[in-house]
Amino acid sequence: MPKLSRSKRKALKHVSTLARYCYFENYSAAEKLLQEVEEDIKGKNLWGSGCYLAVQGMITAGREGNPVTFFWKCKDSSSKELASIRKYIIEDLSRDNVDEFEEGFLYGWLTIIDSFIDIHKSLSRR
Image (cartoon, rainbow, N blue to C red; front, side, top):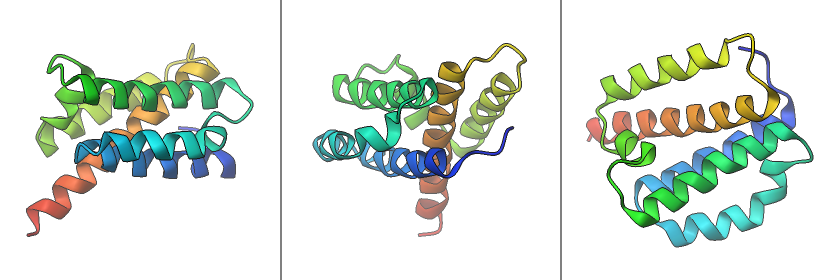
């Protein structure tokens, strides 16, 4: 995986916070924060637009509550299942034909998955 710029890492920190809000079903806080950090995530490039779309999709899917969406499948997955999903996303990122938009989208979901894994770990310690 390529090394990420400072602005991309900053965007992914916001994505991580947004994922936590959505995991605990605080969608109004997620939508409010997304409006506040929209420019940090989107930036002025295709990567940011892809990442933003992943987050926006996560929030929308969470609000709708449809269990067949990727968000709910991830949210309802075990740590082991999340690790498997994470592996597939990393494999997708390593393809030769991934464009900048898709890379941002995949990094957005990778960050969401990593946040869910961290939540599982912290909840299992209790």
